[in-house]
Length: 444
Ligand SMILES: [Zn+2]
Image (cartoon, rainbow, N blue to C red; front, side, top):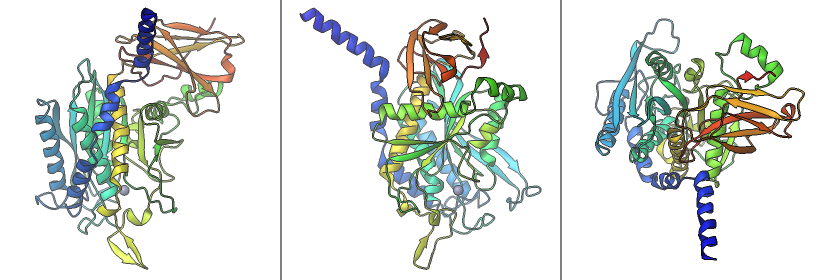
């Protein structure tokens, strides 16, 4: 009797450890609302963080703001035996040819890299923005506290670094403050090009832009829903890949969309009280964000943000007009919510940084057969693989089967025509890679 009990307990442990990791719950609990609040306050007190504002003053302008951010990352690094490599990455922009650039300036990003123990050249990135703006985009002197847009994302990124620097991960994590967002996504473009030049293997970027507003201009108050924006397929795909989609599918299965689904699933697993809302588009209608320049170069990237925006508090000079208080000020930020969205990022960074690489090639076959066959390349560091499938109309990977440490499998009785399929690598700790949509066809 006793031995049966022990056996079943062990089985339970085996299965439960394959599902969840206690470390992820600890990470959620370690995110501090107070620290995020304190950092947003400090960022708003630089007056304006417009990319073209003063760089000399130590109390006002973007120069002071970026030096403060760099100091924060360095202080975090000191607390983890110098586990972060902190530096500026910069590019020069000129007034000439840029209609929203008031004068030539350096676009300076602040970068902190936590090197992976096993795959130092594989990176998962979390970003926020350093810069803010007033009503008029060329105005670099008027106060622009940018509390929600985007001190919230910046403070969340710093806080994620504080929490995750207490752990070691197999893959590298980059925490970054990007600049020049408001005048043309310059900082993101600069860092994406830098990554390409350095040959960084980028798992993806989680770009955070406005993660602290819960009172929407639509009158809805909601502190549990947030949006994950992702483009359907990369803009870098070839004509051949585009043609293949007509016959094999994949219109909504690009690499950024798989990253969005990964975040969705991680949140549903570890923070089921939250409502992640996948939005099937690059960004808001006609508006942009710093994940886009990464997408432009073929990297996976998504935007994480509040579900309900308030436009009287975005890109507005501080003023009262017709009884409405305009301006992106500190009081409007909801810090319990910013804390939750920071935790959303932290658990996804931790999961992806703990996971083995995804299979590079996934082949699928099963034309006019009763079963679907999948074959993939072996991944060093993976202990097994998981096949996912879903109805063609479903946004999420609803069905899965762990198949162990093999490189091909036949899903008996599952007709290839009626579902979409994908494969993920699984590590010894149960963490999974992003799912790979088939990129080759198996012919008999
Ligand atoms: Zn903005």
